[in-house]
Length: 329
Image (cartoon, rainbow, N blue to C red; front, side, top):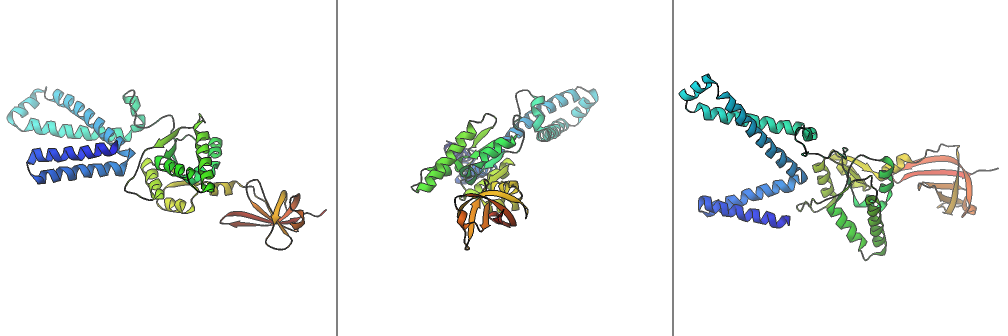
């Protein structure tokens, strides 16, 4: 529908250009101007509507205030005398006052747009029910699944934005011929349904398309910038690029690593040995948060829960690794 409206706008602009000039040049100028405005609309996406609304309301109030002000001023006798002597004075004065008050009202609305609903009832330029930065969710986070628990636990006061292009990408994964991808995609859709049922959350589907951008990561960055939001992702490279561009980013993997319990050398823990290690006599187990525990002497205890004494803790790019030995009694 939007593409049809844009095409009609270009055609009408070309017709207007022909009617004004009667030449092909007028048609070309009309088409170029309409294309320019469409590019601005695509570039600013959601902000475009807010900007246009602010300018329109500002101009309306500016004209009203300027009209009332000049009407009162020209009631004064000495001003009437000046206007009678100087023929251009009245028009210049009215024009200047109109421009001045229009500028002032536009700036005033921009500066106080969060409180504008108190000036004019039923009109507001920003939502009040969710005051925090919107969270823009990546496909990797949805498929990961932990985001639902994180959002519910934190009780965030922000809307959750699911871009339409991310939803389409997730649906393509769920319809994939690859069995593993299909399972992960359907799990991601289940996570979205779980989040949707949470009455405390405000879930929004953003319709921004960004047809001039091909890569999904760049679309996410552009959308986050346009909404002044917070990007939530598990993608390491996307996280780095977004941070370099000054965006606020939450990487769920990094958050999970920060929240993992701290074990110091000499402390003990219980872990189930699930498989053999790379070195002879080693066993490998995993804590509930996924932390790998390499146990010296654990090879013979595969399938059993054992008590382990921590000897070394290593921080790697994939997370923490704990080395320990079987506790001797």
